[in-house]
Length: 279
Ligand code: AMP
Image 1 (cartoon, helix red, strand yellow):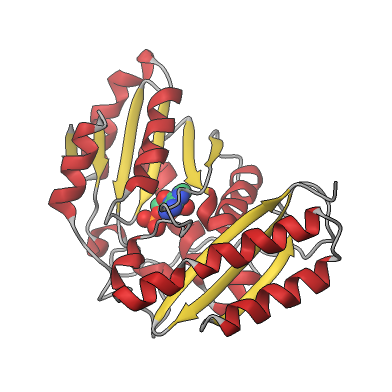
Image 2: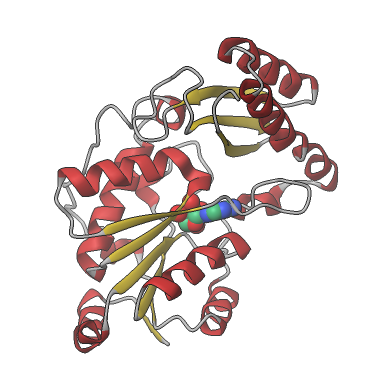
């Protein structure tokens, strides 16, 4: 497994492999868990060569967010990726990836504005910029993103189309712990008490989705989900039924998603569940 921080070295290693078949790519910020590995396995099944990037992208963190404290576990990450048969890991240094004078950003309008975009101004400019630059560095045929970050996948889908990246986007299902909590690198910050409470988050989302499928109007289901979450001890940033492509609020159309972000103490949790439409 090649491990490199250098774009030229990565490109040189990938060049002869392109004849073997598609290059698959999984961008991550490291602190890898089973959710990330589920993406790697999809890439492995779809591509002859699998590249994973590990880069805690400063551009997508706000000034008061947890960039400095974000978990960094490079050696453990590399061991996991070796076991998955990954071909190359690209782990650039921030100072090199964004050299002095770096001035180019990618803003994907509309789909970036609501949800996470409203709570975290500038976040999706950081995401789109790093993904565009990573795509240029890796040159993937297939890129795998997680549905856990529903809006991120929507932003990347829009950017791929608008900027004509020759990349096929694959969105992997949300990988969950046994009690339903979506896996996240940030879950390690939860105290034992908070970890127990956290299971109420997916529970409230799944029950609202099932009620909508049973015919409950979307606004009533959203309100009740919000109330249940607040009663369980969460502060709710948003809990909204959206079209997963445009990220606009929508009625109970099949294929919609209930997307939500909550805070538990200092930890922010993000999740979404699909709605199959009223039966
Ligand atoms: P991150 O390291 O948090 O930036 O995540 C890297 C990729 O893994 C993104 O495409 C995430 O959506 C995806 N991912 C993270 N957690 C999960 C999860 N629990 N289920 C599915 N995908 C995930």
